Image (cartoon, rainbow, N blue to C red):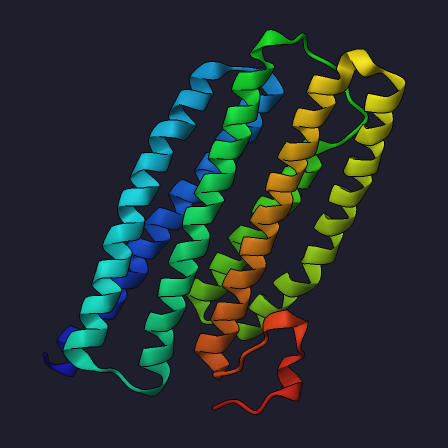
Length: 226
């Protein structure tokens, strides 16, 4: 495989991953809309999207493994392919989170709508915004942008924690709303996981670009790039 062909294959791999990323982001947006409107037809779209995301995950992994086997890349190209494999797994889990939210919506069909004192759309917006920014950092190979995603995770964690304790009080004080409140707790947790996956993606971008492992919230400045 010539270097030109190899780098064209890397571009194809990147493009396929980004198509999958768009599908995963769309699935989360659809799941939150299904929750807001209690529209089960949107849940059907989420379920079909999950099948497509799973197929893309397998295809991206196979493309990446083929490149590793055929070219045995070194340095930044090797880090790129390893980062793609890890990002691919996180995007599939974002799709899983969307499916989890969709499942909660289906369970709520048996209960009336409830006006709960939590801002689920805000939490969803922050989490999906993190995913979008992490992917933009990937597109632009921008480690500094990826670093900014890491600091956004605290806001999502705080919102999720606030929602948890607020909804516990709802379940305690208004037992008739317990099913709706419990579903909201689980949806909030799913969105917090989406933010965690965005953080993982951002860390993988930093690893690719700088050769630095910043997992567990270590500062890039503390690590000497390879």
